Image 1 (tube, rainbow, N blue to C red):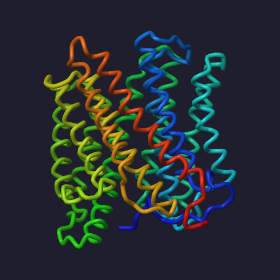
Image 2 (tube, rainbow, N blue to C red; image 1 turned 30 degrees about the horizontal axis):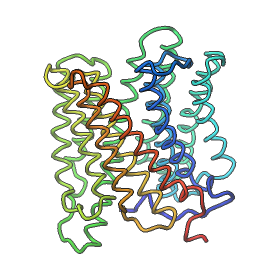
Image 3 (cartoon, one colour; image 1 turned 90 degrees about the vertical axis):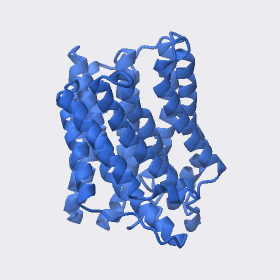
Image 4 (tube, helix red, strand yellow; image 1 turned 60 degrees about the vertical axis):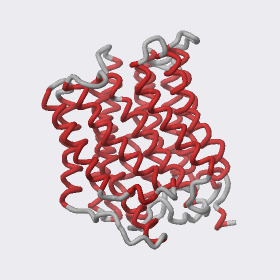
Length: 395
């Protein structure tokens, strides 16, 4: 399959705004490296800050509707030219789109900005991103990418619902589940495309005859089950049916993952981490389903298998590979990149275990924060110079 994260951009103007992955990946890593430690300090009453919303709502919103859309934008804007054979968004249009994301973060952090104005500013980014995606799909006549446009559009709707709920002093759980359900679908679609695709490329280069199973009806069933599980969970998050469908989706996607022969990529962590990330997706479905059926972690903790495990592994897998490929560097995970992967996965594991360790939960939560956020800060430190400078093949 075409490598949608490694085609060579034609840099135009300042390198930082020559391609979508540059500003969005760097900003996402810096934001994740700062926002989560701030949340931990707020949680432990170490600091006291006023944001647009109370601390919990700020944390939930900024990770789900701030950090995640930033990574999604970086990937989508980088992949679209490969899908459509059209020029990438760059220069002033990219600067304006990035400015909307940045303005959203600042408006949510500043309590003196009128609430409605802050909400409108924040909502504008995902609405604009959805508009860009649909414009490219229509212009390029790539209707097979319409599901991506639908998911991004619904994600924008979920953000609007969050703000309406928060400003109306009602629970924001529905909007949060909407976004996380859409995230499950997006990961099943995109993760299920790039993971076997890059695995096939690696195995061919390594002269290994074993290849991932080609896309079949089984893969379609796996994606459909994720979509169904997400829908039922969003509508009835505590119903036994939701638990059963989530577990079924998790088991089927675990089988789907096994069909890609990820264990054969152990020599290249840049590929192996994609399998780890998809494994986290299947595990998160199982964990969340189990919490609903009454075994395992409570649902408020089980969800972190998705938000820290799946998100952490998958986002950094894509960010590292895309950055290396698009800046003309060898697609190989060196020692520091492997450390990034180790830290984010360790942070996710500690986050899941923390609630089960009486007397040590706060300490483990702190270690989880250091590991998870530290992985993103290390990405910014190692990969930041690559993102700021022109690609090697353009120098």
